[in-house]
Length: 360
Figure 1 (cartoon, rainbow, N blue to C red):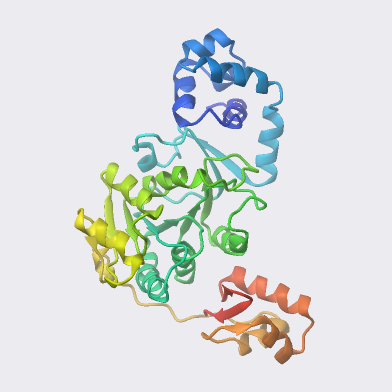
Figure 2: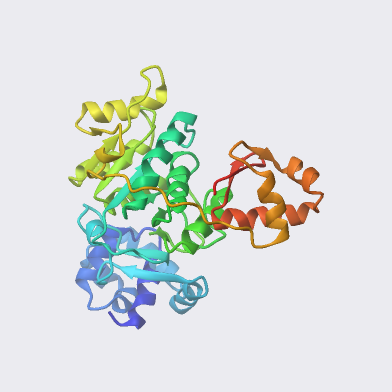
């Protein structure tokens, strides 16, 4: 594809009604997306675009600047991957409605590597967090790419466990991939760690897109579509997590589920999936037949005096920010900036409520 044409893919995506199906019609009809962007009302209608959508596009087209949109992506370090590109994930191309275009910050891994989606409740229980860490660290250490959605709870735990195992993880967002749009905002440090580790942030939504509620079910098909299998750890029976699992089933991908207490609502989703054919997971080798790889000995050493002071006061039990400030006698901005740096390095974890724990 000519690079000149790439900016018109971005421009057409900026017009929200042009989702994957309509963009696919345009790509099939016109020799280039530049021709599609400049097409007449008749040509667009003949391409299969509904008249009311055509009229709206013609009104909004004059306000869309392809060069400015492409320049914004370049400034943010965002790559544009279209469904016509060789590096477009081949598994994703197989689903019913693959996104016509992906906005990618970071690096897409070798598609020949196994990919596992890990999804579950935002309000995960301590059991769910422990199980996620127990399963995902050895799976990631074995070379499997872990894919999730950067949400609180199971998603964040899966990403974090992968990073601790020095593995590769991808976060698929229901917003733009630019720093200001990343949702939830409290996980922006986690997103930075994913990028620093060689992973990627992925979205079909343009830069600056807010995290609207309707985006997440759409996003979930990408999480499942990128992967050979999907693991559900905890989910209520009405959870959006089950949309991801069903997308995987619809694409004939493996679905795994972690059993839990029959008294817990968070176990209802996994148990229902197991009843409908999902593989129950009770140990690591239930996932792709993986045998756990021994954990490497941590090698972290504080690089500054401030890091050292804070690191020695942290443990696996949560410690509040105020206690760290009191015990180190360091200025509040110094403690906060050092904690942020250590979180990006993957040394500590923000447990919420200004509590921190040591990981390495």
